[in-house]
Amino acid sequence: MAAQDEQDLIKLTQKLDKNGLEYSKFFEPDIGDMLTAIAIVPSPYAKKYCSNLPLAGKKENKNGNEL
Image (cartoon, rainbow, N blue to C red; front, top):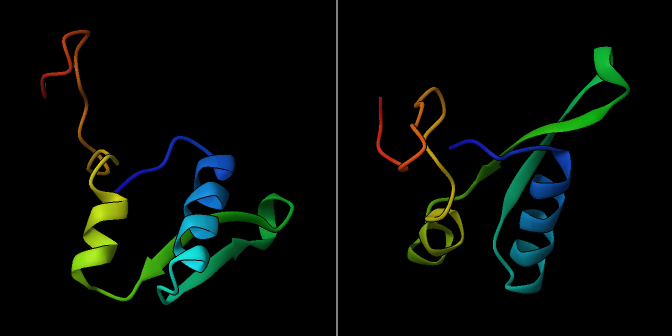
């Protein structure tokens, strides 16, 4: 799954914290210790919070269809 930017990842981790879901954060030291990824322990609830994220590497056209 792909988030738009670090702020989207931070918002997602806040939702996960609020709902008691387990995850790990990954920071990139080469780019100012930015949060660049998270790994979420699989569960039906985790799926709910990730369902709006596009698949990484998939491109969409203006209509939202995969290219």
